[in-house]
Length: 274
Image (cartoon, rainbow, N blue to C red; front, side, top):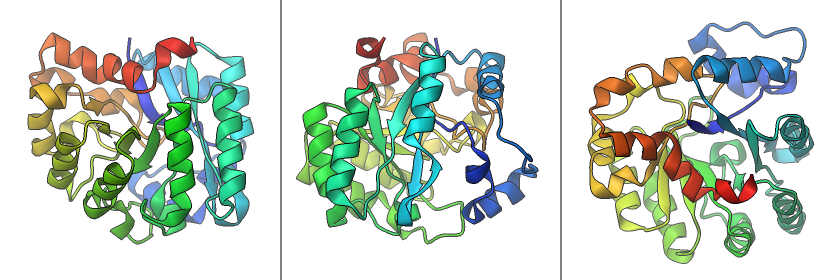
C-alpha cells in the first residue's frame, strides 16, 4: 500500500491562480476550461498503485478559498477509502482559524496545512501559535512547506533554520511534517529532523530521481528511515513520474515500506481514521 501525503485535487480556481503561473510554465500544462472530475485524480493514483492520498485544502489572505475545506470533505465522503483531508484556515482570523481546525478534525480531517509563502509569514509568526496548540491538543500534525518557493513569492519563509527549529523548540509535542525537502537548505532540514523527535520530511514536489543526495543518505540511516514520507504535490507531479527510479535508491524492503506507507500511517494516525 502506498500513501501520498501531499496532493491536491485541483479546482479551476486553484489552477487559474496567478501565483501558480511559474509552475504552469515549468510543466507546460494548459488550464482546463471546466473543473476536473475527482475520478481523474483517482485514475492518476491507480496508474501508480497509490492507495490513499491526503488532499490539501488551500486558503489565502482575504479568505480566498482556492480549494475549500468543504470541497475536500465532499471528495472524502464520496471516496472514503481513497482520501483523507488536511484542513486550511485563515491566519488573519486566529480564533476563527482555531474553531475551523477543531471542527474539521472532529469531522475526520487528519491534519492542518499552512503554506508560509502564501501568507508571507514564516511559521514563527504569532498567528500560527494558537493553531499549534490546537494541533497538539487534537493530536494531528502541522504540515507546511520548506525550501525555496516555486511560485513567484519570496523564499525566506521556507528556511528550516531558524523557523522549523524554533517552533519545534517552542512546541516539542507538535508533530511537524515539512514538505518539498527544504532545497536548497536540505542539509538544514535533515539536521532539524535529526534533532527533534517530532519533525518529519516529505518528498512532495520532487521526483525520486531528483531527491538531494543528502536526503537519500538520511533515508538509509536508522533515524532517517522513520522520518521521510512519500508525497507528490499532485497535480504538479504525477504519481508515476514521482516514483520512477525508486528501485535505484537502494532502500531495504523495510525502509521502502516505511517511506511509502508505514511512516504516513503512524504520523497521521491513519489506522484510527478507517
